[in-house]
Length: 231
Image (tube, rainbow, N blue to C red; front, side, top):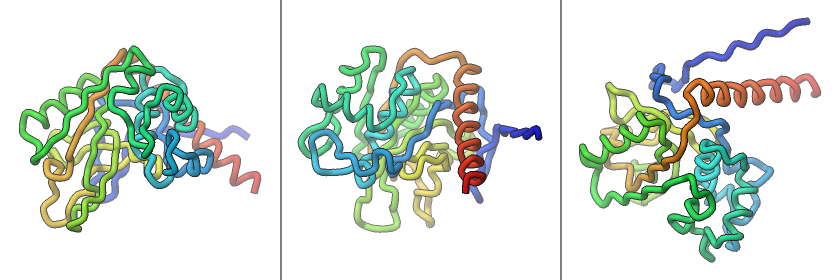
């Protein structure tokens, strides 16, 4: 019998739910999880650290590469980076390596020693308006004194609330609001973000990007249905 699956342009973010302006949203063809069993235990570069424990940035970089047309998963990306020495012996990414691997991608890294300025917030928003993904380095648990750092990808932002940034989170391969990682008392993206990296390159037509993202979403849903039926 016929089955109809409807794909909605709505992102549910719990108490922070909103509908984003999809005219400027960065559509990732695929959102990967660093804990996917296919590469979770893989060692990053020639180090002893694994994707499931420390692979957030490597997973983000894979999604960025795929966004600009390079069809790779994290395991394949890791292999290519090993060939060019893209990670040091500790498994840390060598900034600029992705530009060595893919000549059509530009990487602009900016470390923020203090809380983000108005100019830096505007720089992030301008990149997203141009459909360029922005990778953010943040303290994902600002409730504690200890710095617990994590890399995510900014996809869009709420014009009414600068803390409400839509992110692709490699910890589980899901989209969520950055506010879920901010402090409960005085949420502040400006204080939590300690570095950001803008990736520029040739971006496909908006409708093409949207269709690619929806196709991936559809495949994920169909695979989930198949697993249920097979069980």
